[in-house]
Image 1 (cartoon, one colour):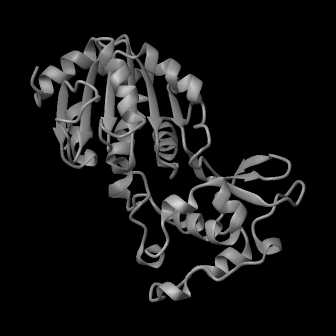
Image 2: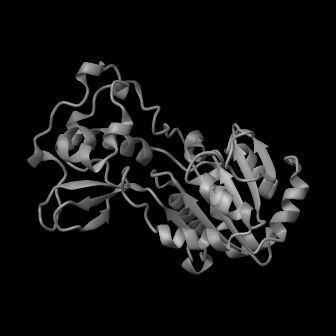
Length: 292
């Protein structure tokens, strides 16, 4: 069956759905000014992010890894949720979801670590009176969150939204005109972020390569029950979105992609039923709620 770009047909399929999942990638946050993992800014071009996103890298050079993630943490704290985040947050509210899909449950699975999906939901709830009873949908941040920290000694985990985690990281932030060789001066171990309970070394509260994604069993449980999968700001050829979408399509469920590009001829990918090309902050609100 050829891909459909018809909004009315998609809405009919959405209306008939009982369990909807959305799998979000980096494209969801692009309009908020969040750089993709591999893009980085000019100050980090000489560093391979794949080599910094491992437990081994942190053990070998915690100063460098902390500064890499602190730069991204700063970007996330300064960013605001965009219209695509807000559209998904609206789906998390049962009364708004049920206008589109009267019998459906909704689960958002995001690969992003910027925390903007949760902030968007909090914004929607606040505008609607702040009642937690409005929220029954689940957001799984499977790769963790930049504002979280985890103690490498006692394991204590907490969220920290302050502008700076410690004076040394604040002082090490290079100016916009810095050269590559000016980046990441070595910070002594004792001056890196420390646990307020045991004074142990903190690490960023995100999931690195080789580590198990958060809530993965609950995520697969939601995927196993889904009859509609929205793939947003990522490709159906990229894991884990490909695996989630394949699982849904293999059971006869529908798959809709909201992305700037699509690779239609790759093997072992989900059968895609609907395709809406363009920035998801434009396509998602329009297709779901008819918002321009």
